[in-house]
Amino acid sequence: MAKTVNGAFDVFLRDTVNLDPEQTNKARSSRDWLVGQIQSFSVGDDKFPQNYTDKNIFFGSFSRRTKKRPLDDIDIMICLNANGCTYKELPDKIEINTSKDSTRFLEYVNEGTNVLNSRKLINAFISKLSKIDQYKKSEIKRNQEAATLNLTSYDWIFDIVPCFFTAEDANKKTYYIIPDGSGNWKKTDPRLDNERLVNVNSKHNGNVLNVIRAVKYWNNRPTMPTMPSYLLENMILEYYSERSTPASQYVDVELVNIFNDIYTRVYKVVNDPKGIQGNLNKLTAEEKKKISDRALVDYKKAKEARIFETENKQSDSINKWKEIFGDKFPKYE
Image (cartoon, rainbow, N blue to C red):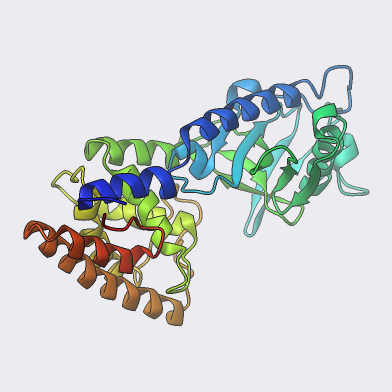
């Protein structure tokens, strides 16, 4: 219930869109405890890789604070000491090769070769995780590039991604190398995603995060095809990177602009800010049209809602926003 549009958005963000602060704190504590357990896996086991602790990194929307409810997954990259391994870039993959000194990786190579198999390494993590007393009743399995830990005691799962940190290349760049889901490896660098978000949000006085989370909620409504969360986040960041005037602290003001922008931007190339994946926009022509059409419809409704608000027709404005966001948007009291 709310008497004003601002009040309605405050309630909507607090109770429906943004993560619950208490749950967030609990999740971070659980994550940190898990990392501590993983760091001990190599103690007393000379066949399990040692951790390169300084290069462990949290990634994904939970880490970037762009996660909307529900909190269903937390991503962790566990960096390993290379122990004499080297990598080679091929056209469609990265290959990691062990050496005679790579004693902690010899059990995880493809048979008859010195090529490190990322699936075997993930399975080794799964085996170790299953021996932790607190996780014995949890579901632990491999899912593409991660070991997935589905806890019985919490609502979220942990995606644990083993990785390596590279030396500087010819361009003085460093990367993380992670499993590609097919037994090989690929490059990534979540540091660049984090830096971009911090810089754009700072440029707009900290007002971008709530907008991203609200639009992610809109994106998941059954009114159009759902865009991949990472694609949508980067579309919004592109918009704010190009914009010179600071974002408003009022989310409803920004949503008018964002819906109008998505209406056209969904047809465009959205480049990976890390310079690794190329165009992130893999939507089909049909999906792009449906999303564009919905963005246009909701842009017009958002404009109407803003006009009602300026005329102090709070009830009419709130009802318009309810048309956009659905039944969980607060009613006018």
